[in-house]
Length: 131
Image 1 (cartoon, rainbow, N blue to C red):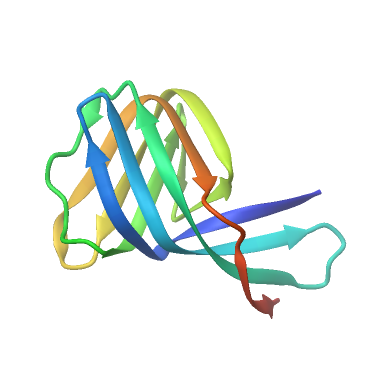
Image 2 (cartoon, rainbow, N blue to C red):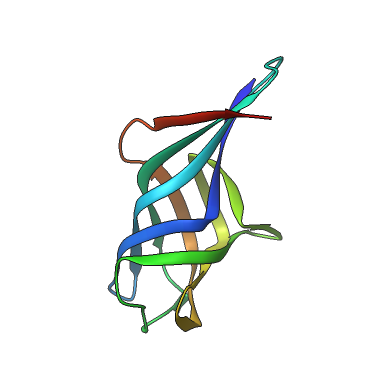
C-alpha cells in the first residue's frame, strides 16, 4: 500500500474564491511526500491542486494578498483534525472544513461545510528521496 501526504507549511495559495455556499482554494505549490510499503526511503515531490468546500456553514471573508504562503493548516473531518498534513486525494462529508494560517496575515482563513475534497491538478514533480 502506498499513499501521498500533502504538507501544509510552505504551501503557496494562488487564490481563494468563495460565494457563501462554495469555497475554492487553489494551490500553486505544495510539498507531497510519497510513502510506499517496503521501500527503504520515501520521496518528496511538489504539485498543484485545489481544495473545494461546499454547503458552507462558516465562510471567511478576509484573505491575504495572493500568492500567500501557508504557515500552518488544519483539516477537519468530523471528529478528527489533521494538523499540517493530510493524505491526498480525499473526499470528506459531514462536519468538515479547512483552516489556514498565512505568513504576514494575522486572521486564520476558515471554511466549514458539508463536503470537502482535494484533488491534484496535474502530475507531481519529483524533488528527492528522503529517509
